View (cartoon, rainbow, N blue to C red):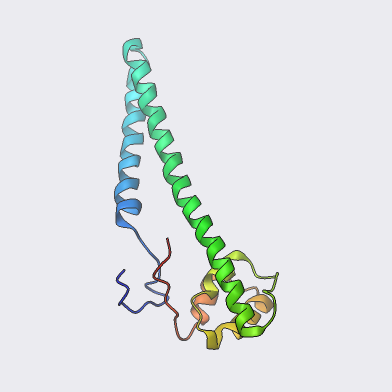
Length: 147
């Protein structure tokens, strides 16, 4: 997404085509081919070893790809929590409410300062979901630097 494009609820999700579409599809095809190759090789002891290694590599790549994304998201979540904690303190002079869940904090980062404190209170009182918080935002505050 271009940083000049206005961001809103409908277009704020970030898709990385090489990761989300190309790499995922390649790993899926590799896994399917490795499973077929392994099944066909069960009766052929000369091919069984190499086909089992290929299957193991395919499974390892799936684990690596999922963890790679998970680790990046977890690091980003910690940064978002710290940024929003500081922002809340700067706007309210109080410590961040402990009742807020991480998914609420993630959604609140899109709220402008003028809407932020009221939306934090509403999120806690009504236990708003991530999507509900984002839909409540009137003036979207873009985040172009997320993973």
